[in-house]
Length: 327
Image 1 (cartoon, rainbow, N blue to C red):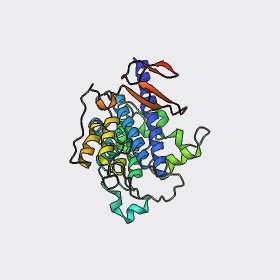
Image 2: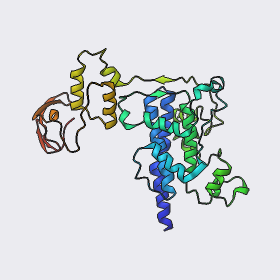
Image 3: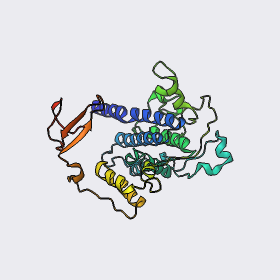
Image 4: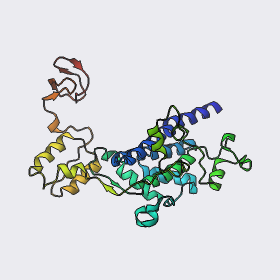
């Protein structure tokens, strides 16, 4: 039984915590390099993985929540109680928020998680609806990740000796230690926050720059962070003021692009005089069942004619038979 528990712990660490760390550092690098949409995408991935790790390591399943960050966050909060801060405070080291308190925005942790959930949602992977980056997003992410990494552990286990420098903490559980010392970093980013042959300078700086919870001793510089909105691709492509033939492009997009239900609801709002179709599961769009269609091989530049037959075997010029659909 002991061996099985160790294997489960190692599996969760490998699949959720380690990959969550990588997503978190990439999210920071994206924001520092003004890649707003990619910041939200990777931030959402990291938060989701830490939350699922906390559930799994404490005897709960993560299968019911898919990629719904708010639902996950509420469940983990129910499990760990006040180990997750309910409010996020502006760091004293950043003069911007001292001078302009309004730029910090909402204090509630769940509101920030909801923002990450919204802008980092898979339905926005093509930037259909744009993103809204706030000056406080980087610092709020750091605080949330700091708290989540600390609780991604078996809370009822006794703290391992390697994490103890104070003899008065011997025999305490992780739950007790986090309650008493919420700002203590239990599990450092050794992989990213210590310069080594495995850590490039770029990753080291991305993980450390202005990261006050994880890297308080780093030589921080003042960042020029501003509020940023990205215009959505749909607004550009489907704007009636830009395209007189909007009906034609809408018809084409509806036939050939897979939209989620959320996408379709947003499209309905953009175009109130037109209701986009919801396809029933298992149905096939008539616009995509043409017996023949010409595709371009992007590797060779050769055109080829294939018979569209769902996922059945098709014959193609110069390539014999192959399963699936070329695209």
